[in-house]
Length: 252
Image 1 (cartoon, rainbow, N blue to C red):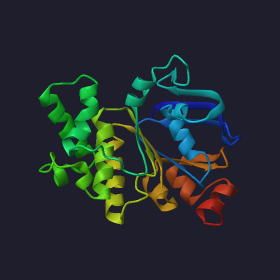
Image 2 (image 1 turned 180 degrees about the vertical axis):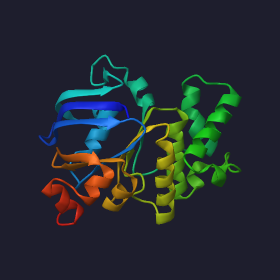
Image 3 (image 1 turned 30 degrees about the vertical axis):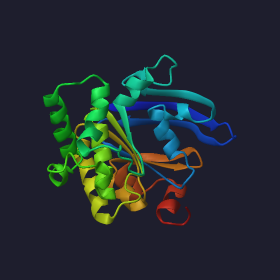
């Protein structure tokens, strides 16, 4: 397997003095689900936001290190951030559909990018909804408001909205934290299909979800990367005592 992302000695400190990441180095494989897990405040979401430069919008005092995506350092000041965010899409914990129809939620960004052909837009709508495992549920409701859907359906539409732009990397920050078990299962099943075409990086909402979904898993604690290996190994025979204690529920 090929390394899609290479993180080299990445550190980040916020303006309030909080040191969120300390010397993080890791290689993230292409076409796999890589899970970042650990207690709150460990730096997982901060690392996600570094990967598409969303941290540019926060109060960052200092950051050092490099993040290479396909060999290019995305932290370089010359990086086209708009193009980066199209290549590296993100789904957040709380579904926020646009106040539009289901169809328009998926075509809006494509039209902004200059795509006017109805056939191409329709093709993108169907393709992305199928990838997000929700096409069969909404194919006859595409012109209804997205906000009328259930929370689980809204989250999968938000995932489809990211996929409509055909990114190469999909970041998910606790995307099922507010969903019922059935909706959670559908999202997790979609991720296993999506990794055939995309590189997936997931911050899960529980240890159980991490164990179910991870091809590779990284345990973060207080801004440090404690252990990073194959998912099956880390959840059955972790090498680090801190990892074992967290997985066994002894803290966190």
